[in-house]
Amino acid sequence: MNEYLSLTDLGRLYGVSSHVVGRWLKGLGLRTKDGRPSAEAFAQGYVSQRPSRQPGTYFWIWHSEKTTGILDGMRYPRAET
Image 1 (cartoon, one colour):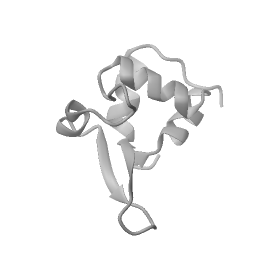
Image 2 (cartoon, one colour):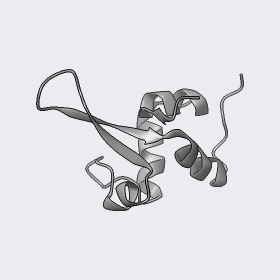
Image 3 (tube, one colour):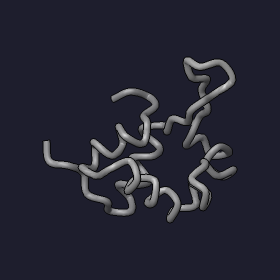
Image 4 (cartoon, helix red, strand yellow):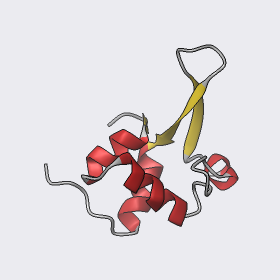
């Protein structure tokens, strides 16, 4: 598994859409109401901001071990493989 994953990649692990994973993270206080990572998510190392290919823009990626650890701990089921 990669060290960092997008919400889409996390969704694939759990068999749900990126929007569902985003709602889960909001419920855990790791995303704000507007969908941005929370200050807590940055402070605790759950998320990292990276530059995108287009100058002046960026995207967020989620630390795979930490994020799946908290989602697994909340008993969100993983997709069957």
